[in-house]
Image (tube, rainbow, N blue to C red; front, side, top):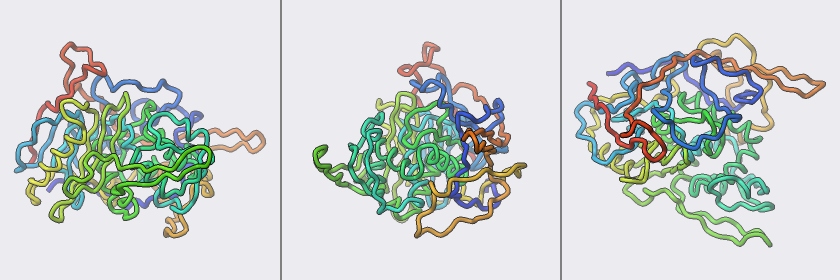
Length: 433
């Protein structure tokens, strides 16, 4: 059996450090700092020219086991041959019940996630927001960039409906409205990053609640599967994923009522438990999904691919079908970690700044979080100048291994671009005992 990363249990924190990834924060200390987003940098408009950065735990270990420390393909010993047509540069298939990773390609590659990041938005906010709370639409919601469900200024929408709009039709306007009721985009993004760290999704760095591209934003095939697996354990969140339709109410003088449909391409396929698509110029096509057959659940993530020769969802369907043929006792190549499997972080040497409890508080029907901050918690240092209202922040960052991988494979002409980047799932395949 492979060695798994073990440590103390990490509770989901519901109080957010005031200054995570703020423009005023001190710049990251070269390659050994935990990655952050850079909102001041130009918006990415194409995938990485080569393979993306490779993620790891803050202490440099590979989350889920050293078998996942690869930029190629790794397959469980004794598993059947992988299906033909896998063109994504990154993907992973795992048993959602046991956490066993059955196969993966570049599992910890930190790709742009696009709207699959909304799964982290849902995972973060579902336990914190009262589903009955009514949110009023704003002009900002109406004019948000990218996909919209059609919220209008003055409309009144319950949080429960906004969650459905977020997942069924990938509404960036719904993401914006949810972030507003949670205390604002800045607070919500900080909470998302805290949730990612809490569950061991160290490859994930959120910069927006919607997944719209921002420099430094990332997730990985491993992390998307980890996040989706966690969603399946929350009955309310899992119900959102499989909701077939939802009704957007009319707003007098502005918009008539209408119905939205679940856009999961695999909805209706045997045992499907939901899915989330994503697409931007930088991320290309991304997808995460899960299915249950004969009492066994699998989760699959697909990142950085095109619609030709096969859509991301079609590749995920192939991986699901393949995964259900892998014997349940097959030796895994890695593990989707549970909270108790995570390595402990170094103890901080400073005190946390005040947190925004009023803006991002737990729902009344949720049990209170542990009020004692665990000794490993990454802390942001902030100094509030009361007279001037100026906020200065410095992030306490833990060291992590800098790993700049060799290229997966060059484009035929040696100049990888958005259209010419290789989409083959080639590269070395290793079967690990």
